[in-house]
Image (cartoon, rainbow, N blue to C red):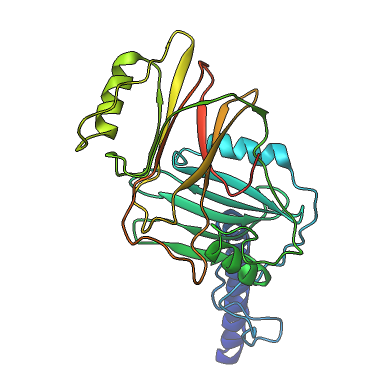
Length: 301
């Protein structure tokens, strides 16, 4: 084989290797895109031998069609291991679901995700990580919608307009609750949610709630053989216009769900006190062995 033939064979061999690499990378990238919304394609040209105009990215186009798979999202909510502070799933236009969860975790303490009609259709997300918040979109056509919803997640309508349809996946039978204490000046100043099932823990919590206050009000009587206490502490709020508007409790076959509705942020021109507040609600409900899920949700049950 002469030098010219060797050169031709080398080029053919290189092309075959490059094609195999590109196919392997493409398969791997597709898997990444399905799992995390990220895909990268490195140096794979088309049949003409030149670089593709979109080299360096893999674009996915996801067709979203309702109805929303409610059971799948409820199962996802129950499995969330870091959602003790917030765990809400909002259906938008019966086609999309916005997930907003947060918990007291060392890493991945919050997750905000825009889904299609099922949990496998992850469109865009913003998640906590050791390196800081990370935002990514599998399909760029949904980035503007995600940014709008995420930025206005504590407002009714999510900044999308009054012509859109919203509903919460939270369902269940209302549970009667007795208000034991309502305060905007709790001694427990970090956001937390607690379930109290015995008198000793109840007495300790009451003292912590009123730390720095004199005199401490009498401890409300609770029959823990029949009832239990739900304690919601909202943490520090920047002014008197913020805080807990109401708390609803519902029962499903799987859990007791406690839904905290906060006041909307103050509108322009609204006069608010500048004092930092620490809202709290303490409720008595019938005793149950079901797990208790705390949810922050802008919708009434």
